Length: 381
Image (cartoon, rainbow, N blue to C red):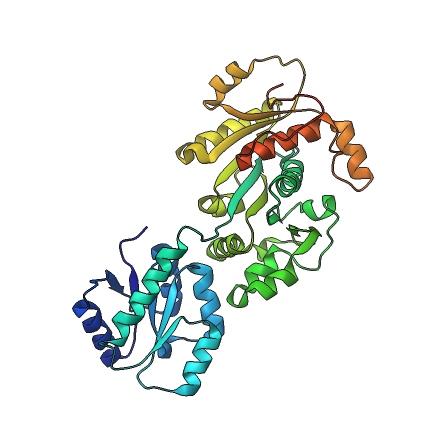
């Protein structure tokens, strides 16, 4: 976390000088930094710095204040906002409070600013232990047909079943878009609508975009049609993921196949990335290439072997030596079971061997004791 606790974005020269003097003369000696560029640059800087407080000159806001506050909260959800204005204006104070600012100050700032910051910084400290920030995991196939979508759907279902927390399943495989079909959640909206409406994205709009598959398990599908002209901006996509963290406890992403541009764009936002492969030569070649390309990701990167036969031509130890990484899980093959389930419009029956392995995988991801099953299973047998 940055050592800078307070960021100043003040255009009015007199207001800025007074704020700086008040901070320097304060007994708290709060570390601060001044930002003098445009609004877009401020938002990007907020996302990187994530200060505990932002001193915001209201004359610098280029849009409606409520919209500006949503933008700030997307980039830095925990940052408190102190609105500054050169004069006391009751209407502006009311509008600022309705928009969600934490404090509204006007000159003289010598006494009011240190007092307001003391309240804010102490409240931030009390929130640190209880603040909610959802975890983001992604499933990526080494090549097409390895089963990343199937794993994403079943793991999301199992995470909700085992944790009872708020789960989001998001389809970022924009070209295939099978999550909505498999989860039977048709929708007129997609992840691209969230990206396009980022400037006004809030809890209310978000609830209109997602589809509830069952209580505490929501889905946001890929678009029904997609072309390269619709490709989302990388920074905007990251901001949407950051917003997702504030709305859900777990976010499960279907990232499609190979190390595509979407997977690369969201890599920094992932808590874990699960690379899914089969024992096919082409798939293992793709897996090894991705592992080599993401070598610096450390423990964030995990390998999952899918559709594993009962008798393998190569041992797990030999395979791990070739790949240079240990396997996180090995899942059995049940092609016909999945085919029949999908044909009937359902996910795999929970009593099947493969479904119980999905449950074990979800338990491991969530750090929970293995889910109970009628028979004993392990991720490697």
